Length: 140
Image 1 (cartoon, rainbow, N blue to C red):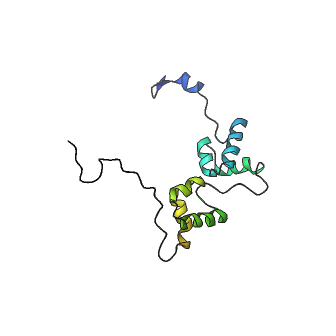
Image 2: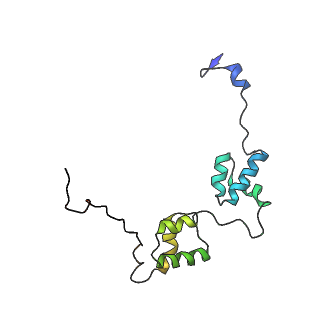
Image 3: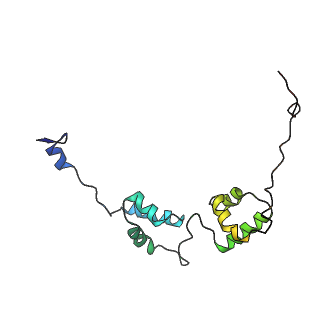
């Protein structure tokens, strides 16, 4: 009997994927991703298990001070350092890259500490102009 385009014998042979079970190798990968600051839900989604199960797997492997902060957030020490760097006119993206996060996160973290006049303009290196490219010069 053929149902839905697949012979019945073939449908019976197919194994169903076990949900909620992951191998030892995957558990090691989960612990490594947790060390890198990935979210429980993101890790769980990639292995087809719940965030709660990921928490249980990684609970015993947690370092004494707990897991590091997740990506996309700055510690108080990092915030203070980012504020100092903003005062010097450093670019948001450059600050964010050094903390493995985005410039937008740095912007949000330093918002409350902005001076009344605003942050200073970004320090930009002047590009040298090559001869003949000044405005007004035209070569056909």
